[in-house]
Length: 75
Image (tube, rainbow, N blue to C red; front, side, top):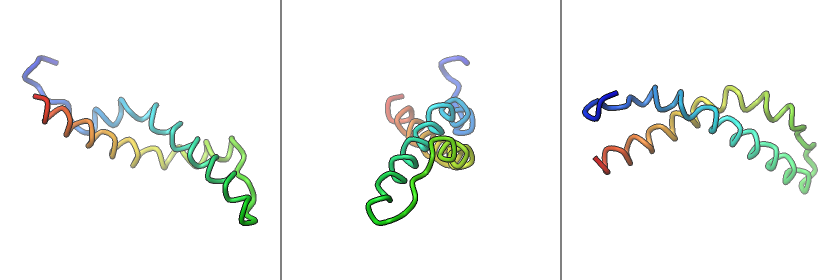
């Protein structure tokens, strides 16, 4: 891309998905551990990863919108 071209939110989301999905998985796992304090069963790390695969998509889109806004503000 040249300096004049803008990154679309979808391209940024695709780039950020490998970082957003594991972050969602870690947060779900920790939430499951905290849920044990009120009697909920803990989430296994594998189950957290499986649940995080689809939930990582909106997280990546939200991160891409945030980054796009920062890029617009900087440029």
